[in-house]
View (tube, rainbow over the protein chains, first blue to last red):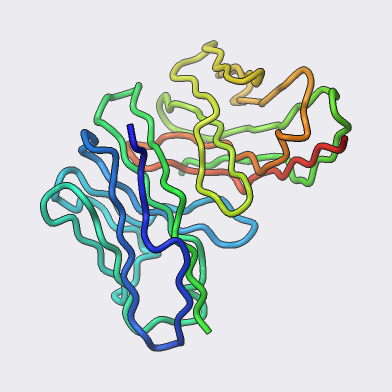
Length: 115
Length: 110
């Protein structure tokens, strides 16, 4: 079990630039989630995939955000025209659909700083 | 809607002290409850979970019991160590997404 991996771990960008993050879930997991965590807060749900289908997007996910999971394996989260308010830790989690026993496993996160 | 409320930190304890971090929740239905721990600069690690009322989750000396009557899931440890210093998050599962509390920072002094 190699766990959930995320790349890059850190990203510094200038306002207005586009950034893309990648998440590789645990290999047999069919569900994948993106959360955002700002300083001093708990993670907040952004979006969720069941295999390659994106089933829900939070209202936190503005039109500048897009997420994909093209083959039901890894996922990417792109932020276009970044703003300083996008600075946060972006966390990816994965799980195996298992009803009440389902548990999400988190990656180490990508910390984004928008200057 | 669903929500989680945690006691505010930081909590500062001496090594070998008893730890309690309070967590209460509001939810429809019967969610699973979780405690996650986050060390500096890292993601969240699952500490323990409970999936139904009266279940006790335990791991690494930490325990929490799912109390439906008080809608609580308090985290306890009998004797903390310096290495337990971290931020602890209580969470509940919705249909699929998790709802997290704001986290409680624990600092353990040698």
